Image: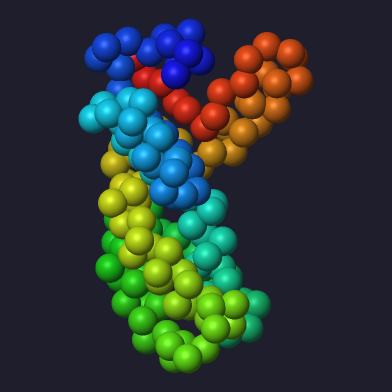
Amino acid sequence: MHSAIRAGLGRNTKVHAIGDGASWIVNQVRRLFGERTSYLIDFYHLCEYLAAAAPGNECQRKNWLKQQKQEIKKNQVLKVLNNLSIRMEPDHIADKFAPVRVSSRSIKNRIEHLDYQGALDADLPIGSGEIESANRYVYNSKTFKTDRLLVDS
């Protein structure tokens, strides 16, 4: 919180937080910033799950993943879930051998944090790469380090 205040956080500041969706992170963001916060699952992180669930040979996997990414960015999450559901592994298969089920569950469990279209329309980032790079720079310059936080005053 102190880092956010030093970065310009005020009473009317909206906070756009990006993370991997771990419940403790979501809860911490809500606790610290309350209703003024939007929380978004890091797009790259979500795409890792989708990539693991992609069907076919390398070319087919690449095309399928590209289509799913486009759908996700347009908030067409139900289309993506439907595309996954038609290839869902049986329940008796362990998660480590069921990437489609794991991907589907990951999306369903985080559906309220997948407003990529809203973030893109507001010209906000959908991935944490910029912040992680900045963290390395700031940390290496021996000043303060923040955690995946964008402040828009």
